Length: 248
Image 1 (cartoon, rainbow, N blue to C red):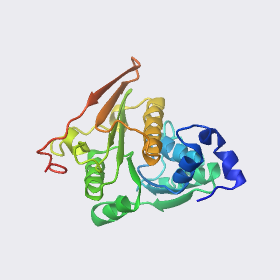
Image 2: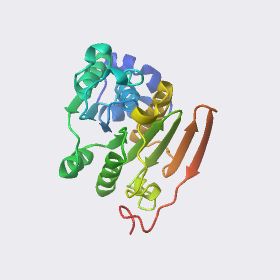
Image 3: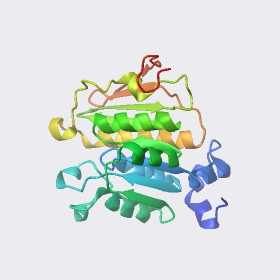
Image 4: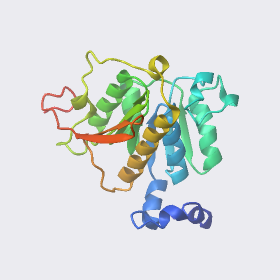
């Protein structure tokens, strides 16, 4: 698609980057990203992808805005309490970039419904707070060959991983975690420092844009962040040949 003068001005600071240029920006405008979860991680992901010019966003979240969300879920406001999170997020997205096409799904997707949404998107971003959703989305991404950007945050710690099923030699999320016996910790039970969610979500948005632009991304690597000590470390993951999802 060709950009008009207003779009050229809106995205001018990105277009100046040699890694993006006009062709890259047009690629973003024709891209479709699926965001699962519009909480502490999904908030910055959705805002930055919309601001950066990703043309179409599908938002999936079955929850409503609660007062306790507002400490970290910056896409929602006090006036949104009681509303579906996807509707509240859509309004903020369109306030930033009215040209963004937003599809709202106020439900918890599974099975064929999830598979269809993943298949229709260029990339999936996992921003939920539970292992069940992560495992289900990972399996759908492996089946459809859709890149997955996964994030998690708890207390003052966070992690980020990019899993690209287009590379059959690369690991998937299930190579890292097994569905059986995972210890489920949520911020509602253990707490979370608000900017840490913003940090992980911003990194997810960064990796998403790089993937959509066909820029090099270190897939199969787990980035671990300890915000209390401000330490970053990474682990290179290997494909598990016995993985129940992607193993051969």
